[in-house]
Image (cartoon, rainbow, N blue to C red; front, side, top):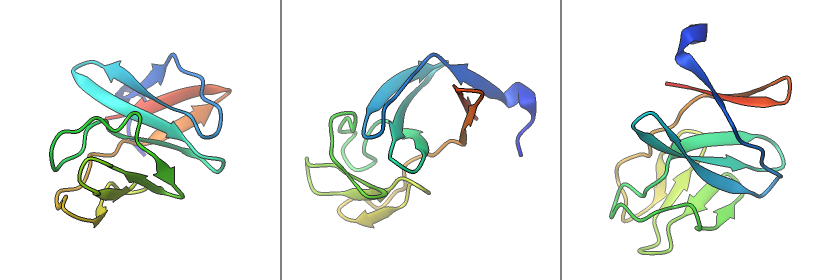
Length: 103
């Protein structure tokens, strides 16, 4: 588990099915909540830098509709091309009703 100093609290509340881009330092992160859990990952497709904030989520995948790339939100890995490079992912936790992300 990362050191406590590496965790940052997010001023964010999401309902299941919602996602939102947050700026944490120099990073632009997409935080997504499914019925089961939260995910935090880079907010742009690794293929063409397309913003993922308004893209559909299907199960544990986010789909970039620009060219059809599909990423597993659990590890950022592409599961359908043309993307070949994974999205950066970040540990995220819910603690006492507040979200924390680590780098």
